Length: 339
View (cartoon, rainbow, N blue to C red):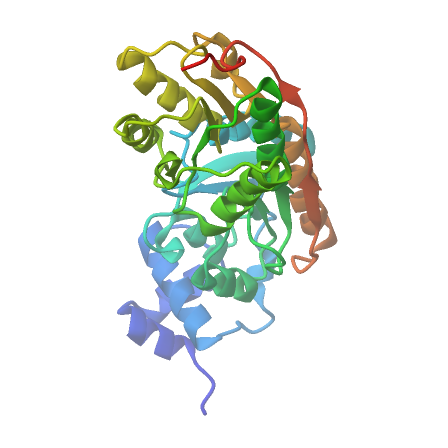
């Protein structure tokens, strides 16, 4: 097979060979869209310039932070992570650039920056799909996943032990005397749901408790859907006395639903979440929760990504799993009243 040439690239991109040459030599005067198109074709053809002049592009100081529909900044947990990373990046000498993954990561600004040599590294707020992983491996760019849920995915990640946290949350309600306990979780992220649900079930099993199927609500993924999950529980004649929620956001939405329906928290329903968001302290009543140290997760991710960048070795696989059974008891839980 003939080696791809500048002429072939220019023909495929519908530009002149001079334009292709400008892109190869990182010269100004080319629109970002055209530059990205040419670099994408070069990648597809595995074209390497003579002497690989692209390596002389000045080293980028931009680390891209990529969100998606599940790990968005509308989610208060990830918004807090973003704030912490933005602050932490300065001491490492990098700027954080936010990019949103819609349907395809390759159409994102982060992917364009990688092709243009303008991304020092990428931090993802969610696990990667197969398309993203292939693209990143072929691009040889450092990347780290925060709050990954998959086991042994083959890339650097900072994780949290959600099974332990949910076990701790459920056990707290049981120790208060609750025997009828519901669960609000997120089936849309299967590995996350499995971890939280396993922790919930382990605590129940240890105390020889069972759960009513109607009290298991797994379709939460934002505030509105979590609100609806609690509403589903209220529609049944028999209610639980305690609700374990896999995130603080779900718990706050569930509490709001119960309060709007005329119930008192915690006398009618005890709620417990996982996260310890700032808002959980000021909501009324303040939410009992299991604390996730978001500062530690964000700082560890910055350490991982900067180590890869400095070593010029994006294939370093670093894994850190944060474990926490730190219970923050506030006003949303109490012993159940007799019904």
